[in-house]
Length: 283
Image (cartoon, one colour):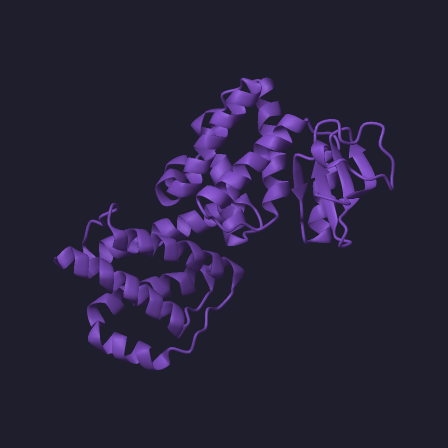
């Protein structure tokens, strides 16, 4: 924290600054910007958080967002993000600092105006993204501790959706809705095609679900996954015709609905996961 020089005072609690290395950072601390000027060194004991945002565009958006925001809401957002990254080991795009901080600020403001939004995806979010939903529930507790406002579990699901969006590099919450709907549809195809009840407590189901989250994100981004596994693919298809019939069903649906053709590699990964689930059912 040594040799941090003020570049611009954003407000009493937030400044834009440069580290000794020349890297631009955003620094938070109560009263850290009070009566400070450009070029002054920041006392280390006043710094509570340093944000190192690599994208200049994101950094500028973040500074603009923080300019008129209460410090407590910035701290709440940072606490949520740190919990998700450090305790649950989730890998998040740095856009989360902008999107989640803005959302927390708006959610508290809405609540104080008596506006409570219903989250129509809450049940699916809780089911398909349990870790992210756990982050959301922790967030509700922190917000209540800091502000006295109990935003409820609908809001926990909204926060979880922002976490999911940052994990998948999705552009917005609408993308998360679409991804969740596609996951639901694929699982339903597997249930109906193979006439089975999926054991949602099993490791095979959890692995399949994790794969589907990122698979669905690729479908909407039209990003093909290629890992040149053609030889393995041929062997696996020949040895697992029944499981592959389900893969074909999913591939046909996605081609028709989203105009996205599954690569051999994507089909192979779906085949492996479906085979595990069917083997588990047989046992």
